[in-house]
Length: 545
Image (cartoon, rainbow, N blue to C red):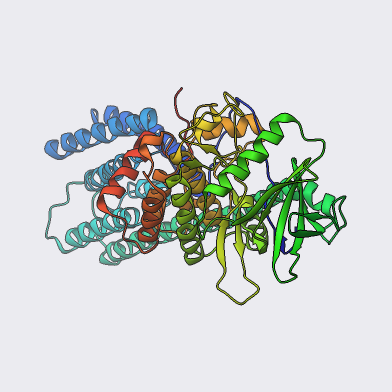
């Protein structure tokens, strides 16, 4: 609405659907590596079993031959296990380490048995070409360097005559040939390792670029989706001052001016007190409003009279124009809502988010203390007010039109889905009763949006979105914003817990936890709670139902 606003918003409804989380580039590389490991497992397993059969007919020193056969049998077994059982996840890394470590040990025995200066070391290059591209960089480089070092030391000891030559293909007589092999074979290993790491680095950088581009696209989509929520209203008001049907009339002691906003239930007028010194916003109900809308308007008026707090919009007067058109005179806000700010800069900086959360949580604390649940916390209902007298900007909570009194009935919305799909709590999405913890979930969703640049739940349509709210965890925040700390991940896991009992118990606790997480000082108890929640429902996964 430009610079001034009082707040006229609504909600939305729906029921079921599903959506799949997009796999980020790092995960895609991990899946690719596991698939290649399974292929390498099948290849090495087959080669090892063939070699064991051949070794039955080869000569050589018996103890070395049978030791090498045992190592080949072990490597073949592990290789075939990798082929059959390797899966993406945390268990893959120790399995890969066992696989590569056994391969290094077996290759050393193979080289010594067949011959250090035979073609046998070629097999080591095959292993390096695969293990060297592993995401487990230190282990991969370490294994490859150990394999090269074992070869160099063995070759040197053989050349110096310090260990017996038991190979099927013996050491050549020429010292120059021995020196050449001792130097060049490890250099080939190092060259293979370098190429493998370069290949991994190139693929990783490409995926990082793809991830970054995808994040920008998704952030733009999120901005567009939120802009569309305001499009009808923006077109209706025209972005500039506009005369309304009540412009120039007097509502109580207030002279109505231009229309500064419109919603489903009414219009908002700029107004000035008859004394000429005080300005305000006057919300007028539409003449065509039905009984339900009239009851909702009076509910907002009733709730507004119960609330007097810095984080909430002040109400000055309630009445009816000509005893027919109800109106609500409230504080005239100067500035823009959070949705506007997020369209301008995609996401807020962490200190800005902490400051916003502190002020909004204080407003919710006061509302909850008065027995009121807002039920529609979203970016469009959080407004950064900049006083014209030069005072410090402050965040205000708008639109208590679909809020409810915790100690009263809810006949206006009973058994209906109430709220905005992408920000409502799971219990609201199910059409169940909402309490203060429902507002905390919605605030958590807003914080996720402000921190990452993307809403936590966004399906292709309303049913999909509601399905995700109830059954799916959002994407890991640190995947969307890699600079964020692990504590913020854990904080958001608690704030967005599917069960109300697992969330923060109060707005004050939530705000304090965010401040602690922002400085890397989340308590051990909250960290443990977040970890337990993520074990039950990891980021991006779907809950069984």
